Length: 120
Image (spheres, rainbow, N blue to C red):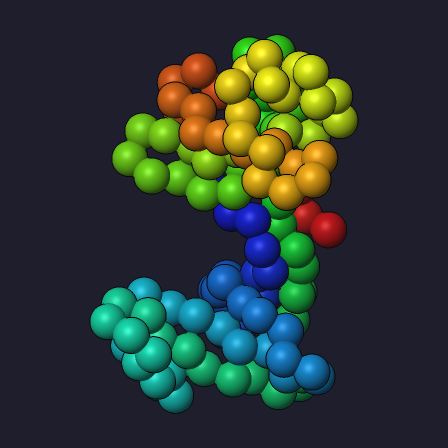
């Protein structure tokens, strides 16, 4: 499940973070020009002429008949954020109020349907 920036570099997609005009790309393994920032996480900074297709990817789904975005995945659970805009519905679903009007929770992956990756 992806929720964040993605960039294409040398024909491969990488998780990315814009950094001014440049972009930082991340990889789980060492590679040419990548520096280890922590075990299993490597970063490389690219100039604008080195990459293409910088997009924002957001995964949406339906859980218990309501609309959500998927924020993370852990084992057989998905961290989801309710996008229906109705606080009573969010409370009925047992979601936590993460911030004012923002409701999140963990949903069993087998209960989630209509997973779709949007590219903006």
